[in-house]
Length: 280
Figure 1 (cartoon, rainbow, N blue to C red):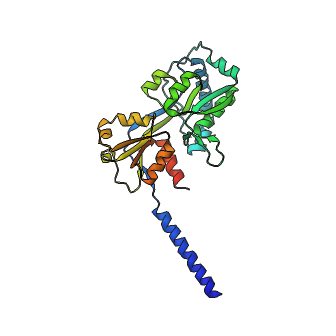
Figure 2 (figure 1 turned 90 degrees about the vertical axis):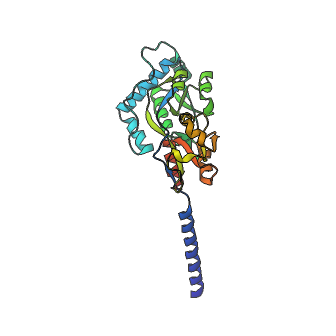
Figure 3 (figure 1 turned 90 degrees about the horizontal axis):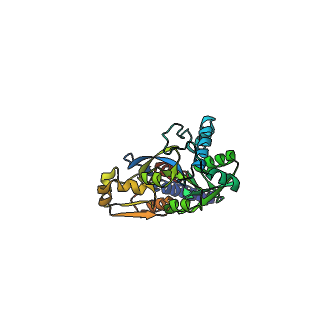
């Protein structure tokens, strides 16, 4: 009996040891200091929907003043991140259009988003429910507006068309401000700062952009990561391949299994993916 117990204990110790070794050999991922771009997030409406945009901006200002954004920030990021003071992109004063009245009459606000963009907007792995930082902000805005929030997942590469067609009322999902987007849509003043960063395995030889020559880089199609990479044509030309994905979760999975060498992504998303990966 004692011999059997001893054998079982030795087997258990061996299994635990193998498990520990396996965990130790798992890859870890890091955000490189050398970034591609510093940028800001905004919320987008149709170009002529000034009244609706102005009302949402007014409510966000109220939320910042009464501490609601601080509470939501702490829930998702652990500290205040909402930009309470930033320069406006559009003149929203004295609107004369009926866009706000239409939303109030309809009783709902349809928000277009990429539902795989954590922590801004994504699906809970247990419930399938769309949650996230932007969702929490939008829920509070709709509550104060007196309408129902409707979340509409879209192809991020077609967001401008989805908005212009009327299928959605607003693009609200960590959308980076760019000159083209400011020209095509009505943007609220920036509410969050961000960077386009490189995510690599901790033991990767890639430390800066100069190390990207001959490497495979992944990014999301239609995202500001594309613009960031295009702003460094020499770096782009040095790459072995640029692999475009429909969303970042698949791109990160390919990074984990070695199909790409580096992921170019929004910092808020990249850090979430890393922290989530290393706490599983």
